[in-house]
Length: 254
Image (cartoon, rainbow, N blue to C red):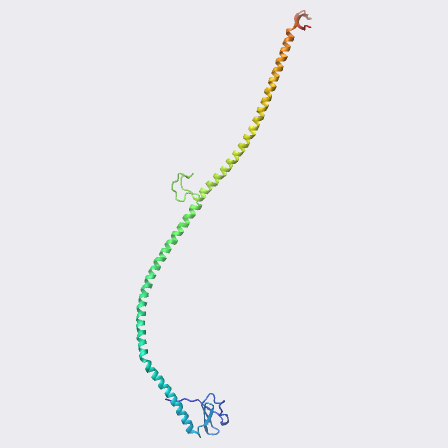
């Protein structure tokens, strides 16, 4: 194994712990010495080679022990690592099988999706057709399917809009008929009142006529009696042309 140290060139006076924080050795050329930092202690290797060699040996020993521990640990876990690798290999094989099965499933799913997409497309077409047909049944002014319908005024099936217009017209006609009926009722009541008034007037007229007839009869009888009790006088009148005329004059006996 090899040991690596960082070396800098410093004046002897600058070979301090603070100045050698980033290096283990310093060459003090002005003093011809090689300085070594071991923790917080600076050693003159030139005059203390034995101490430096001991420190280096201890460090090498510690490094060797660490390496030995790592090797022992590696040997201890080798069988476990091999067993784990076998488990991983088995898992990898299982994953490969599962991947193949998944690929089959994906292909089958793709087929299902393709079939579903075609079904959706067909359904969308049907929905579009149904929307158009529904709109025709709702708004068409003619027969949407031209099928015979004896209940229809046109003899063919009619849309909801057509039936709505028929219903609206029927409602308007019904309203007009109702208004006319009310007017007729009012006129009938007026006629009834007029008839009652006319009947009352006729009754009064009848009473008056009876009274008049009675009065006239009385006058007639009085006049008849007057004439029945008169004496006739005859006067012969001679005119200028020597013609004559006999005139009867009624006189009242008294």
